[in-house]
View 1 (cartoon, rainbow over the protein chains, first blue to last red):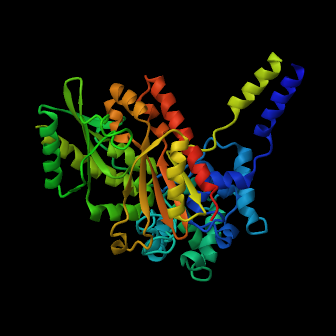
View 2 (view 1 turned 60 degrees about the vertical axis):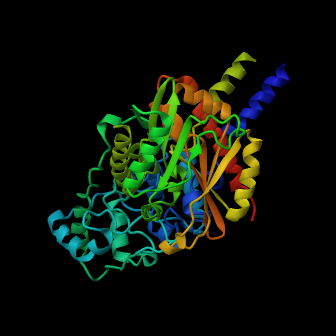
View 3 (view 1 turned 180 degrees about the vertical axis):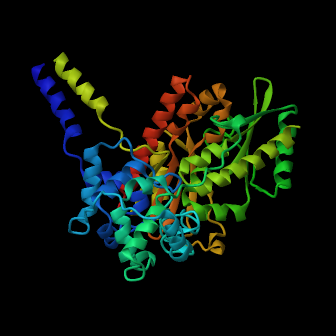
Length: 342
Length: 151
């Protein structure tokens, strides 16, 4: 019995061994940043980028993420795990990262605003949210910028980047994203003004979906018609809203043999292709919730028309652009469902 | 013995969860066609039936996409679907489960919704919450297998 106890204890030991940065990176980061930081949905972690950012910045970025800009936060990783990931990423450059002073750089935000409008706005946008659609690099499609400019107004960026680090990047520039060096173009005091202005930037308040359906997994409406009539009504309403309708399926189709399928649960799949490609351009992971679908279920003597709560669903991607689309889609789908059940 | 087992259980449950994400994702070195093939074989090993595979890539080139492979695999267990829909018809938009298989040059990105993201919407149904966690574990394990596929 005593031996079993020690064996059990030994089996538990690996859980508390030093975290393996490579494994953690591959499990948590490689899907977006690629195996060696080449980038994908996520930004490339190139030697140039890594040479400009401190370990502290990387660690805080992992902790806080970039709300609304795809990069999730990892609040549940232990400090040791975060450090292990940072060390692994840093190992690609073969040298330690820069260390920046943490003292605040003081400047005049009003003067900084004027400088920002002159030098930065074209790429970083009026509100500092970065111009263009999507994030990451253009591995699969063309975009106006090869690498999306940083969202300077993002709370994750604001919490992660020290003033001194921002100052260095302004002075040095970043070749991989076509950011020019401003050394000799603006004075040290003017850089301080720009940083003071950047610290005033805030992301716009996100549009929210309907309060009535907030926190619910799906929109559910009861139809006064029978199943067949309701299905036809939904199809007509979708066609009226310019959607292409795919061949009808039963919810259980493919999961069981054709004689056992519940034919009182119908899935009506639909798509607007032009919109779909626009959305895939914003976030290629959208397929995880595709295609759009309205289900008609006959259950306990009732006919229910059900769609996923798309405003809620869109927030899963941590992509503000997609969240905005989710709110618009909510209005369209609710209109279709109301028309079908009137 | 009891003390040691107690310590081990505390350690096991104190072990931190890796990430706080709403999507489950993995990148595979292998080409999308191969990943797709292996995924179709892997799903039944976990007890799931492949309901159907939806092509989403038709006409992508017209919209500046260079990739030509984008599939969504729908899968599930009919008894689970029936049991859950009997109690929660509002779960129907999320069933069957699905995994997107996306080509990125010669590699493949796999993404699925983390079923646990639905948990807060069903606070009074621990059985469903357990089910959502089980689905998450299965999806994560399958995606991990795809991640380890060689070229």
